[in-house]
Length: 221
Image (cartoon, rainbow, N blue to C red):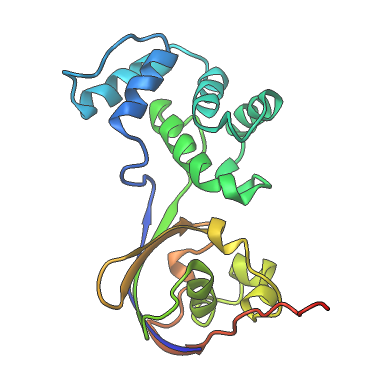
């Protein structure tokens, strides 16, 4: 399938909008021993209270509490403990082996980074606003294959998934690489991903045509 792409903007940010809800802040305050219903407290005040509550704990202990709150259904106790240690040394939202957890690990990491004034390494996210025509069968896999035409050869997606980008094998990882893909108009979209996967400096062309090859599984008798 042939597509025409126009890149309108590429932004680097350190916090994702709506990553945490007011209910999340109230629940976390309870986890950190601060009882507050949140009914008469603004979100801004809840964040300030949460940061105060978090600061009473050691960084690793605070990380364990938030990891348990957000990812206890996906990680066991030993994994959570290990990540809580590694988060102080590395950008875990970029380096953790299970890339399906990178999105949530980014949100957790950045909350801890701000609460502890930089004790945790800061990670970045990338927001890409683009237009794609024809607006047909647009999924995360298609978008990554299309953007492959403009990304620099050093890009990590190209290096790790070149066969999938060429349509030679399935590209299931696309669902985890792009954290969010949102339609914003007739042919316009916004995608969110990690700077690890896609950085502003790696975009080489703002407008281009590209042929996207779909992977087709061999039929077995």
